[in-house]
Amino acid sequence: MLRHEFRPGRLVAGAAFVLAGVIYAGDAGGLWETPWFAVVPVVVAGLFLAAVTGLVTRAVRGRRAGKPGAPAETGAGAGTGSAGS
Image (cartoon, rainbow, N blue to C red; front, side):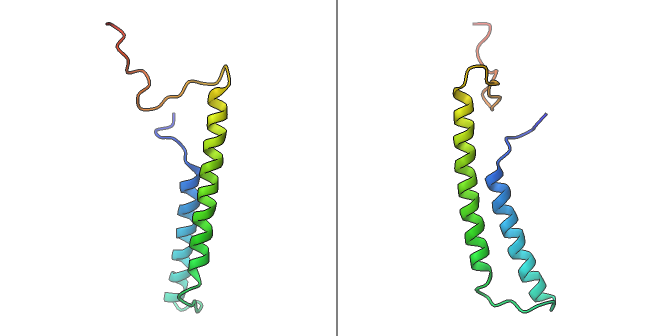
């Protein structure tokens, strides 16, 4: 059972920031030389891919929600109606 909704855009953004951290850690450790501006394209590309992934995910989930027979959404408000009233 999932405890939260899977968000692939956040996964992609996190991977981009981890890669930026690895690049700077390798520079700090003396493994290679990294100019200060080298990480900017990595972070910008990661955020762009995360945004595109988020939009695609939203479009796919919106299309699935409109289909008959689709599984019911189990969000925070699911099942909190007034059954006895």
